[in-house]
Image (tube, rainbow over all chains, first blue to last red; front, side, top):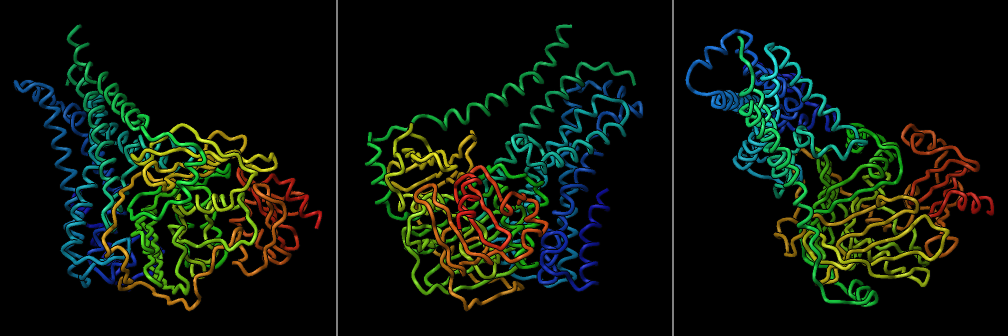
Length: 249
Length: 391
């Protein structure tokens, strides 16, 4: 899955390289900037991956955590060890978080590498029109990566909870991914604007605020609070469910 | 069994904790502000006498005009296609502006340099004004335009500072939300105005037709503020009330809320959500177009923002009938190009009524007659139809 994610920036970069770029205002944002600056490959990839590819992989991994073990019949043996269910849950979530980090890192690293390889790199124009040097820009990109990882932790917790509900890993994966998409659909409907700040996907594309001059931190803060809330609620739900569950397989 | 119950405790407690935190936040923010007691007239004088402050802050603009809301994706796309095709794209922007909320960061140095950053999703529109130069930058289209302003901008109006050179006071129309220009390349200036600029427009035209009173003190962006309430005495307008939150310390308007008749939610509101009263770094006001951007040097000086000018670009002579809040703006026949009312974007907004096509919102009404004349005002549609028939 990491390889597939890493392939996204490579595909974008190669496509742009072969077709000589696009006009501003067409296709995903930042796509037209790639020919001028290779660092935009990363940003374009993150814009493309955040709504679908990254939630998909996080949904698969987090949905597999408990249900996967149950489905294979290995959960019993895991619980036979004197570690306790809460610790198993924690370790499973830590695994999901680590995968999220690795997934975003794969996109960022592959994007930076292919960008450096195929395109010139220089001072980067931010959304505000101001220029920052390439090192500052790379720092901002890492910050964006951190933001995206943080954004997906709430989904990871939801996936973990759903995974404790069933013994069928595919069901848990599908449910998590469907929730991620449903949340984004709801977020696009202005009639439901009272609900928007409560959707875990609401701030997913807010990382653009890190690309303004000066950096707008409010969305980072709001996103962090929201994800911590989801983490707490669904972590507690998963704990309640998993520690009271009759494990038969 | 009791152990099972204990295990579910965290799951039950967490939502309660989250709810507690969420509810406690606003309660703290709404703590009553202690400010010196002043009369409505004193607060009004305080607001009128206030000077532009050096500040950096975040403005939130919301409009609830009773128009159909479009999904975020559709309006976002419309606003980013400003380079596409003349009027239609501009109208797309107009629609986006009338229906969607906006967040903008404002930087003022108090001496005439201004920067407004309108924060769109994954994009930004900037207006940088320094000295006699105004730069506009649109990150979605990657275009930068340079304007030279011949006359120094009016210091009273903070953002864009383009005073309506109306010979006759038109308070009702001055409260309309700032409209997006029909061609971003011709009519620059900031799409979002600061509360100070809008309040200045309203207070400048204050006449005896308005009852001025003081409401309960409020806190806006952590600043204690008086709330100055302006209520039209006439029943002929759609405006129910205009509330201006005036900073208790320096008299700067912090928030302007326009209430429409028969609607609980504010029809239009622009106010600071975050505010720092200190001069921003000087580098904020120097703008160099990034490499790769399409740069246009506009030889045309910045047009003045005349009241009610939305479609005619200020070319056609605009006359005013009626007074005060119930004033009606009239633009003569031919103002609106034939066929414009049937463009898809406009068709969504306009409805066919006796005497032409009308845009009816909770706050203002626009009537376009078949011969292209334009009537607008903060009045019910019937008043516009009467004005149109009387001509």
